[in-house]
Length: 327
Image: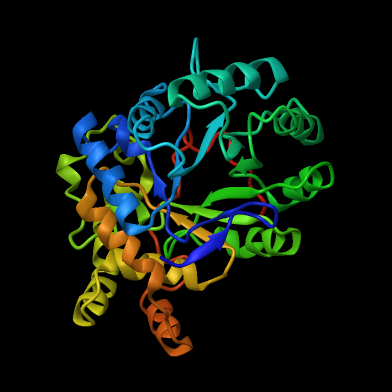
């Protein structure tokens, strides 16, 4: 698989990594055996970067990964995230004491003494980002993390953090139906030598070979409460994406593969982390790393799905608490 550097000071990983939120059942029931089969296939495909978090099943995703890497040490570059409290209610805490508690718990569940990359999952606006970056820099000095990351921050926040310590990666949603990072974050990452890690490049399943079945999505699940998956937005989005699906299939390419190829072709410092719980879907995702699109093909795709085509907000009001706006 094509290799890309995880920040200017980081190691190389496969251009397509694996988002592991699904291992906690966030997008449907799964089990340890299925998740481990997916991880085994990842190694065969050259998918070497795993992305997880404390809140993915309250540690379940990390435990699943830990059980696998116990027998496959050193094969993956692992990133995890902390800084979100869920009890007694959801909130953000970037204090050094809580981040240390989060990190130590993650290391224990993963069965490792350090992770390659550690993200602040959501910024705590009560603490200056310079102070939070200083905390993470101490974790680097202690050998507990290889690099610093932030999830869903604004370019201005990245600038402030990078003035204290190099930031290895910024993670944000980026796909054909979520183009916000093009309005400053991709440029800031390139300027500062920070990897841009694109989550949900397959639009939470919308660019799969078949559109998700709205009736099969529980109302309480993430997608069930997401405006883009609620009617009338959902039906409109399915209809708009169908020409893209045909465009890919007519060329002998999975729509998911083409969607990831489009993301990776936007900038060489982008790493895509599609989330899946099955080896079959991962095969389609991984194939996106080694395709190239011509300028004409990119123009054709963006004519079919122009910026801003999606109906509905990216997040519900509750889901939107935490990510930083910048445009």
